[in-house]
Length: 326
Image 1 (cartoon, helix red, strand yellow):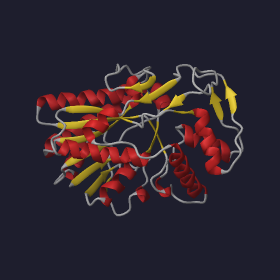
Image 2: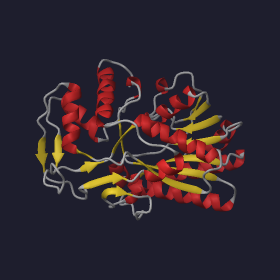
Image 3: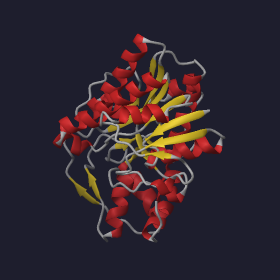
Image 4: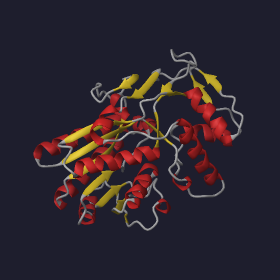
């Protein structure tokens, strides 16, 4: 199979590119390399293009020659930034999706796996959130992901186009040390940053109605997330998915912030004394996926637990600190 991966030089995209190549697929990457790093995907052809620009339509259409399917990661993903620059986020994420779909139409490619997000659920919370939960995002980033899903459904209603939208929960870890997450956007790299600075990580709220009082989230290993993309890709290309279908990608198991900090302490060997601060407004107590639809329809289940997530992330961090290119 020949697959075009947008954003394939990024954290998640590079893991998917590696798994595709390991199973023998041919891969071409489209990436503007603003946040991606071509050293993550040596030997893979990269078409450098900014999807939100109209000129990308022709560039990507040419790159789609001989391609069977697209996996779409490229986009902006900082929630706070989306609140500060909402119009730009719509231009980047929604405009980029529109241009990609136009390029696919021109090239006759009718299959996609889309990198969506659990942010589409907005304030939904609980120990088992299904895909049927209300999609009511509370920030522009989440809105752009939901609009992306709606665009795929609209295209599918107009022609024989099929896609899967994967709604990620909390992604962490590294499938290989050189592929780790270098952006300080999520809990694990945030704690690492504090350790590097000799400071105490902050836990926002220790009085939630959870076993240890801290928020509970569903953390998924990035290697499991990558395998979910391959499972979804197979289902789309083989015709087992018709139209656009959304899937939760998580473990179905919650881990608290305190449990995560303790796991980092064990992996790093560094004594951590977190500082407890007031709750952040809008943080729900428990957010855990119901991943049963992906299990039943894609044959996919997560294989890695919290310890493996944290240990792999710490090894990647050590490589970065030592001057590697994670």
